[in-house]
Amino acid sequence: MKIDWSKIRFDGKYKYKKGQCPTLIEPLYSNTKDYKKKIRRLRRAIDERQQIMYAHDRYSLLTIFQALDAAGKDGTIRAVFNGVNPHGVEITSFKRPSDTELEHNFLWRTAVAMPRRGNIGVFNRSYYEEVLVCRVHPELVTKYQKMPGENTRDLDALFESRFEAIRASERYTVDNGTLTLKFFLNLSRDEQRKRFLARIDEADKNWKFSEADVRERTFWDDYQNAFEDMINETGTPYSPWFVVPADDKKNMRLIVASAVLKAMKGMDMCYPEVSKGRRKELARYRKLLEND
Image (cartoon, rainbow, N blue to C red; front, side, top):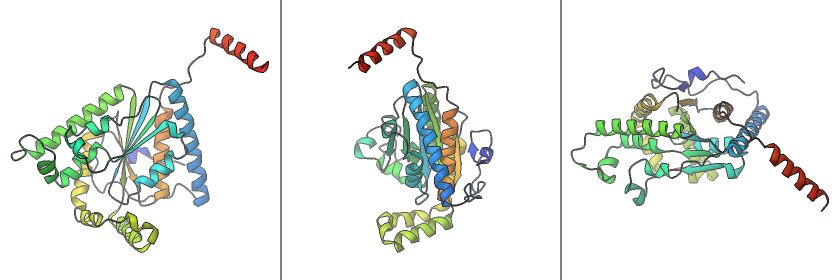
């Protein structure tokens, strides 16, 4: 299974342009059975690396998922991390900010959800909503976010300040041992329409449908512009963006899982060494247990 990372990984070396990356590529699997085999193998390998990371107790991994509705964030998170020890994965979904969260700066609610050392953190949406949804709907800032000078605020300067804060925060996060991977699930407009129709036509998917999703489709171009700026402003070598083709869910999950495993293999981790004295103690305890 070969993936050309140079075409989908953005770390500031090259600019991302909306429409540049495909939403659909050739399948990385031959059939459903082959897909299941490959995703299971990737999950097992991620689980093994997480166990080493937990024992090493120096690093953690943060994965961030951003996308338009119906791109498959929830399903991808389940497919990639379902086989990992549940004690080693911390999943947080960020919805509309609560009243308490609005009383703090925009990074506060994600800062308190950062993964512990040894664990994998998964953010379903994140602080990037503050430069996506708020960029498309600036009234969310002026009306609800209690920013100083709300009636005279220079919004361009505000969002540039937020980009700067995000870059600094992610640098601080990585410097303290939390590797950060960010995934933009790149869904086509036509495929989104098909998935919305499926949510209406299939009874067991009706609960997923929201009228707000349809309203947000009218801002498609605005969101694409916001995603472009987001990737170019915050894609760095220490915290890259992956623009993942999302029209084929199986492909998308294989790519995300492969990126996670590749990053974890690159982390300098190992099981703690056991001293000679400790080995003698273990041998003594073993003998006690054998004679019990």
